[in-house]
Amino acid sequence: MTVGFVGLGAMGQGMAASLLRAGHRVRVWNRSPEPVAALVAQGAEAADGPADAFAAEAVVSMLANDEAVERLLLDPALLAGADASVHVNMATISVALAERAEALHAAHGLGYVAAPVLGRPPVAAAGELNILAAGSPAALAAAEPLLAAMGRRTWYFGERPPQANTAKISTNFLLACAIESMAEACSLAEANGVRPVDLIEMLSGTLFPGPVYSGYGAMVAERRYEPAGFRLPLGLKDVNLALTAGADAHVPLPFGGILRDAFLDALAHGDGEKDWAAVAAVARRRAGLPA
Image (tube, rainbow, N blue to C red; front, side, top):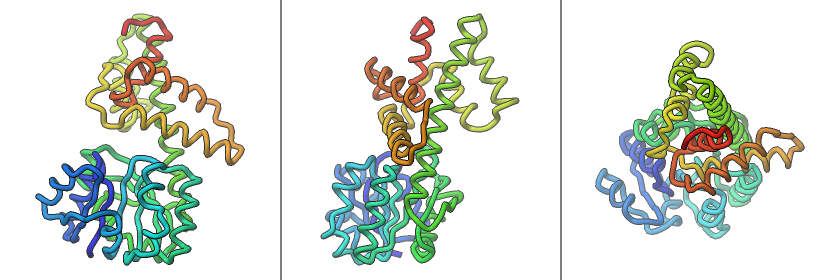
């Protein structure tokens, strides 16, 4: 089908390329022109703006945060003039904005699917993302060929789009907690003469197998925070999303406040361009270990 794609950041570029490989005709738009040119070289068409992207049969968006989604995609005039049958929003956004987006799309007769993803840019480029999706059965059916092209598996969380955003926020909150706990455990080990790399090798090979402890654990143990696959400010954004969602639902998240302050500490020490695993440096400072 003809697909509009809005947002060609580190993730969006690979996702749009996956749609091209699957045989879709992809019309791309991005605020900066360089990623557009790179996708055009692969066979995409350049869109004149978001409205041109929404004139396709379906539209996919992958923007950075609430502000970008609201400013670029939730304009009532844009939605009223859309020819697309469905908009697949793959950004990690707040539950409150997800609810607003759901209502605005419904008011203009446009199908809406929330489909945030798990995976880093190389995974997106390979079309191997795990996709967390929610929406009406009709909207999900329209989006399914696109999700299949971009992901290894789609996990369904209900008929209301905010349910997928809630699942993604909960997942990233758990990831942040895991990174913090590994950082504290590695600091405890190092302060008592145990090499963090040895501790993480044992943990990821016994009690905690899988990509979180083997991947992020190695980054923490080796203090390897660059290049950033997921920048630290984005981690703070997701922790704040979890805290806000918890407050709105009267769900206490005691670790959330600790995580927020650790991320703020890392930013205050100049780690904003590093991977969010760099929050581990805060635990080292608290323990009096060398930087």
